[in-house]
Length: 328
Image (cartoon, rainbow, N blue to C red; front, side, top):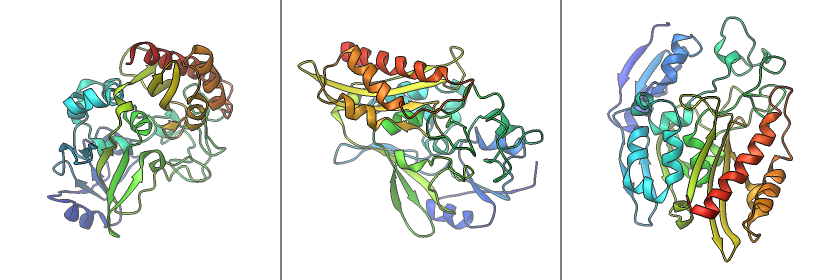
């Protein structure tokens, strides 16, 4: 492991000041970054520990919920306001990783975890444009069963691994940032980038910027939400396809819907095309399948992951059908 310095920040201003040094990285729970350092994929010159910053989960005057970036995943999933108002978020967090990892992982760190593509982790034997820009992508002609079918490029077909971020995308969450040029807010759906020709640039974060909080807007619709994850085994596996959905039905017609996919793209995939096809139409299996077909018309699979299109189609329809019948 490459030598590095370690400091623990007392407040956001101190963290940002320390992170302006070349090669510095913020350290949350370390459940991904430390692994990448062991594999020499990440070699920061300095680590700035931000786990002592804001961990609070609070209700704001307008009814929205603010989650401090240092809040642990377990604390978020178990919080009464999250469980009752945003069940999709609780279910997505619990579907991810193990209890031990969820106890360590932080909200901010979850947003910044990197792809689990095998070729990305194979630092000595494989080409990867995300690890080294312009090197090439061995996943495209290799083993790509778990890779992207939406929004991929000739440079990268990796998927984003987070379950939590899929739920946050469906909930219209926003991300509070602070940095050398001051605070700003970014919609979660816009926070992660598609790969294009620069897959090594994964988010809109500028140098030295720190995630300080995540905000969930007040939404009665969110209380009728759920998360369904399809994977190769029952636990501790990344999604082949996952669906985060919220649905409201009045007099048999869809009056409100939020839908996002995981395991299919370089970022959590907000299904705005499908949402547009659902509102005002009957809450039926035929409608749900037609909406899924509309969203997945843009899919561009490779030889080994074409099955994901039908898997996503059926999972979307089944998840929406459950919500229409049971509410959650």
